[in-house]
Amino acid sequence: MSRHIANHPSASVSLARICFAIILTASLSSATEEEQELKDIAWAKTPPEVDDVRIACIGDSITWGQGSTSIWRKSYPMLLKAKLGEGYWVGNYGKQSATASRSGDLPMYDQNEFQSSRFVMPNIIVIMLGTNDAKTANWNQAAYAEGMTTIIQTFLDKESVTSVFVAEPPPVYEDGAYGIQADVVNQMAGSPVGTGFVADIVKAMDSPRVFLVDVYSKLGGAKNSEQDMFYGNDTTGGNDGIHPTDLGHAGIFEAVFNALVKEKAVNLSEPMSPPPGPVPTPIHVLLAQNSPPPSTSPSPQPSSSAPPSKGLPSPSTKASPPLTKSSPPSKNLSKAEEEFDKAFGVEEASGDFVASSSSYSNTGIFYVALAVPAALLVLAGVRTWQARKASTDSSGAPKVVHSDYGSMQDEINAL
Image 1 (cartoon, one colour):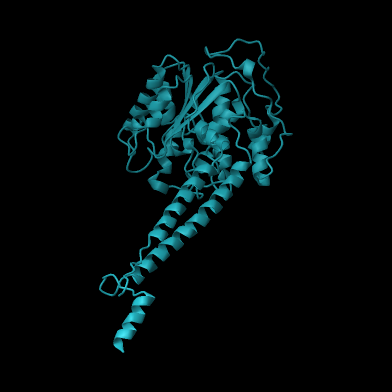
Image 2 (cartoon, helix red, strand yellow):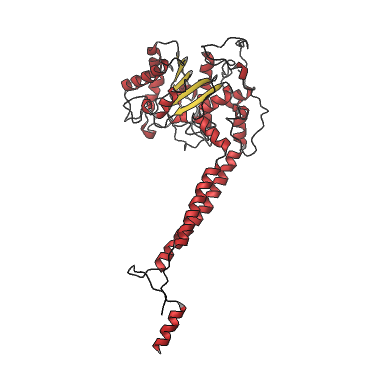
């Protein structure tokens, strides 16, 4: 008499399922609540307070933050949020590959980001589109002008909107990258700057609420004179000459911030500007000083009792603390990151915006927590394959394995 023993890999399958559950749990728990809250704010998922001045940043991957080392800390919308502080809400509605043209490969007007931006009742709009329109397959000047006009007018038609700022796209440092034509972007800015397609669109709107923002020359213009803003170690964009580095995103922030202050869209101090002389002060030094550099004719500071302009609710009662050089650096950041955060006042931003240094260490913990279960999962798969192979013969039929009792009986019968 013999017993038939089937060799099933159920134990290995169960182990694989357990490993999968461990991986899922690790991925969910790796992001702290603080980090998740930061991402929600960066991607405009956190609603503004009732009395906040609401700023919506519309654009493509550059607005989204691609190229920066942290889209929720160092993209220009989030630098703007850190600078303005409490009383202001900034939503990042950047969409990768978005075009102004309705005939482009990804029209901004049809994207959820654009539709969502209209429903937060924004007060101030910043639009920066055109880089993807400049692709060889997309470029059509009339379609670009029509698309930009439609987007601008859509916001002007909203009662809550007090001002629309239209930024020229940054210059292209790698002609032909992603099919983007540098000469087309140059024409959008014009020569001299401010006389190109974007300026023409702003003038054609013929509205006292629409303003031009010169991002193009701030990031080096046609001469590509700001190489550090597109090439360097402070980027995740692969130095592609299209997406700015952290320094480049800071340049966009400065151009936008200066425009907002100049047109009195926000109630803060005078705009920052480089000091006279052939060698400009580095941007991070200007921001660390938190004041305009000395000039021959300093502008008078606005009175704190002045009424809010442009019909916006005044954030004066909720003003953020002044930015200082004594801001404590984050212990887990590199020296360069510490200097950057101190310069831009990231540590002084409101508590619901600042990422703690734990977000960096949490990333390492996440990968370690992911690697161990993954290795176990691979091992479980190998064991399953080996078990199945051992349980079948060359024809694929199940093998019959005799127990010790059956083997002894067979030997007795053979005598």
